[in-house]
Length: 484
Image (cartoon, rainbow, N blue to C red; front, top):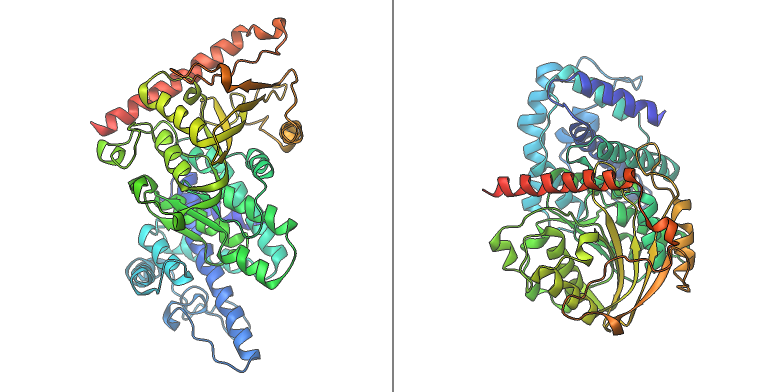
């Protein structure tokens, strides 16, 4: 039922002249689903108040509640066509009245950690792109049929929503920025092992995949109590996101995973001066895949001790600064970070090694990130003590990665298991920093245990790397053009 409903909504959006990509489809589906969810939430709270003999104060004025504007029903429980808005009248109401009203909550809410503020944020940043009121009427009817009440329903909805995010990433363009393969996220979480009472942070939250997976991981392992559940819901997961659509998708994804008012702030993380980060702003766990390939302007670079235009390198400085002493991090970054010889790269590697224990480095195969032709590594570190040894693991799934052969949990099973003891194998080795050249701090992946016959790359592998370098070069050139 759920899957078919999503497909039907996509089919209608495909026909509408206002929505023309997977990004638009999920953005438009998100605001409608959010209002549908909000109605269920209000109904639940109203029922709960009634049982306690209290009166519930609705968040939304009556005119803007789902059963009034979206789905007014007759005595038989069917859409009342006599009063239901449709066609141009429906679009006019949504654009001129509904969205401005909901956006106003941003200014009247008590604080950013409330559902009211999230309503204001979402509808300040999104626009209704559905141009046909007849198409919108059909979509509202499909959305009304989605049940949000039970945890089973929410679980299925969240799974389908994740699938939509994944498809958006696969669709190309800039959709890939929203989707980190979930098996990789789960492996990163297993190694960092967050526990209830610890604060988890992602300053480049995107679709909130890291926070949602961390919630699932911690929920399954915690002692079930009201206090623990409240801590998990309200005081555990934190994120920041710059882009409008990603912010809305992240909020919706967390809501479907069971977090009512996600602590996600709509802001440019890199706009914050890292010198202003205090102990109260720090976190126990950082899990993230910051965007790479961007070129930040000089005024943004002034917020950092190590000046560089590379977005990911600025994020890495932010994350090191945002981690508590003893805090643990798992961060995806381009593998060029390990060996670049420019001053910023060398300084940043030195800073990481001196201030944190970079205990594990996971080398990912090409094709891990669909649509992105760059090689990546995952840095696992703990803040507070300098690095003495780093255990490297070179992931080799034994196949070419791609849309038809994506990363799966089984591919990372050995890494997660071996990481506990850090042995030397054909795919893993230990690098002692005693012998590291301190002028370059080069951390390149150079597997000393690879059999000689396997060390030579095939022509196909060389061509594939050349193609990925072309993609990266074009991305950099495009970023430079945008700045000019």
